[in-house]
Length: 220
Image (spheres, rainbow, N blue to C red):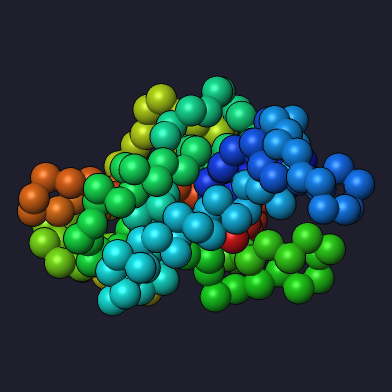
């Protein structure tokens, strides 16, 4: 709450009932309050977690930090919840993932819809359409790319699009072969899992919307 909602969210962080030091009138008298709510609190929590990770391992790349934050998040969502993204950040779980130098990331596409007011990147619906991203790193074993067309934000079952033991760095992870030839909007949920040789599994998810003859990635 008090921030963006919808399918473009990556993760969530607490932003309500935050205990903090707050000046009651702008003077020198400070009081503790437990009812402050704002994105001004949730955003710094995410940034702080990223800072903690980098302070522990300064060699981490941006994509590795992204992967750790999303893969360690608590899956607290409800069906079709639009407020938490992949889940709520978990600093303890994220720090326990170190050392980690591997990436699981579903990218936006190189095609852009510059004519619409909502600047979502798009893929013209060739048959099939490429899904771009990254799946690689130390102890990489293999990855799976799955999808669900149930229309739910958090589906319980997925179908396999591709599985490969070949690492991918900012390339094509697989292809989505759309059977839609109407003008309706069809919601597609993509899930990328990267399996490491030590048994750990990294995760990324994104929502796609298929508008008849084009595929729009809703999660930038």
